[in-house]
Image (cartoon, rainbow, N blue to C red; front, side, top):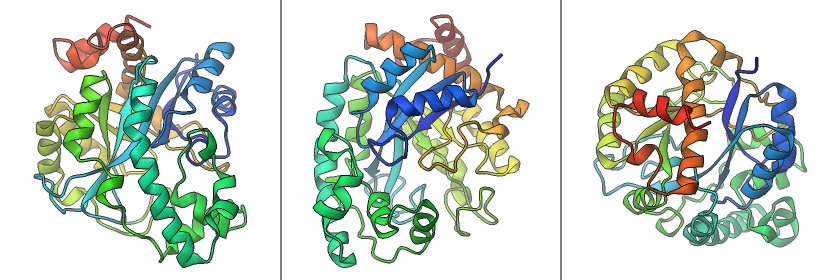
Length: 331
């Protein structure tokens, strides 16, 4: 019986070698029981992802990822999950209703436009022509986003290994501005109004990188107890994490805090290069059984909010476990 799940697959609509349809097929070929699309700053690939999931019989979920500004909040200018800036964080948005894609697109349109201006400025520093060298590597013309990885991929002449090296050594990064990162309150209000579950992607301090792709750096672990309380109080209801990225000790601490604050836990192994496996074998540890349950609850939530935006996880009564159980019954 298939059990493996992954709710954080990037496609060509942000940065990935996989079109949405190909990502679904690769997910099923790899043995996934369910797959989720999470592109940066866009849901333009979602319709194709859903259609291919239906065609080949693989349950799918829809989400997106964007950066939010929080320097004015209790998080302040503390380092969270963004390696390059302390005033912004990544958030993921899960269980997007299938009839709200237009609303999400409009919400993210100014984000992509502002990001494009910053991309151009970085390309000028690097001696790249944005239209000639970078945009053709993206799905920009069809509503896709253009990321720093596209710029580095142009510099790397299409070599993924070289892209990784350049990313680790990138010196020409220009910080994202306020116009590119919605205030966290506005992002959470938009999600709540549209039945979308917001999640904070846990990164955790890196000493010796479990995956070998991160330099030693301190992130949330120094003040994780405080951070989790703040995230809960401002209205974030889920945490997403990668079992392969962190140590068992880090994740035991994180899971205990999630239980304390009744925060849904979502599996998110980001896929954006051909060398990354779709299946996370670390997920098979019994410690992470809850990530299977939450995936099926997420699928049930998405079906429920597509019928009625007030009908999903966010507006249900009961404990987190009771809501998960009820939503699993929809699938």
